[in-house]
Length: 301
Image (cartoon, rainbow, N blue to C red; front, side):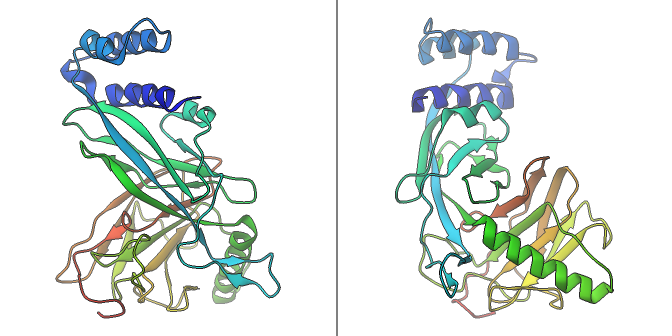
């Protein structure tokens, strides 16, 4: 399917989110957009029919490698900013977009033009799929009139994810003296104001930050926060972020979860993830992760 078809699908999402300024405009808007699909109306004509002010904005990002390449002997870390080609990118709120076959290119980049209601944010979460990788979902991203072109996801291979998850399970089992299994894992990075996967400045993390999730379910039904140490490994003994900035939660129930962070005197962006059946990994990567106002240099408090 073409990017234009993808754009039409996003038009439908924009109309459903925004409501076109009418009490219940969806039927009228859906009819107009359906006529665009059928080639009976142009986008401009559809806009007139649904009495919406529509605009086209760019949406895009990059799929980055994360973790170790276990196919090498010995295993070696993927180079920072190395990318994944061929990953399917779709919109969780619009499952039909999975069939549009939008893929990351040879440089890991993907993009499409989205139509949205002018002046009204479009809230979408992105799903990344590729054979040999765990299906991964982003937080809910707010797309404004400027669009968004620097989305990022750190995408581990299935083999590495299985090993890393197994290590965490072993650590927790050792702490509680009983077997422990982990599913529905959420990972975010608590980053400095400048932190970005597109920047070579490392480490990204803001140390000493406490992270919370809502709704909070007591351990062991739910796991977390578990913070990543300086070696980028989950460490259940840590009580706040290290200079890596990573933190994970696990065994999350289906539904909406909000991630918040605190460290005086700074403020941090709250994130919302929607956990759903069939997706095992949830990731927010800088520059759109748990970004804070701390602008100190890399590795500093």
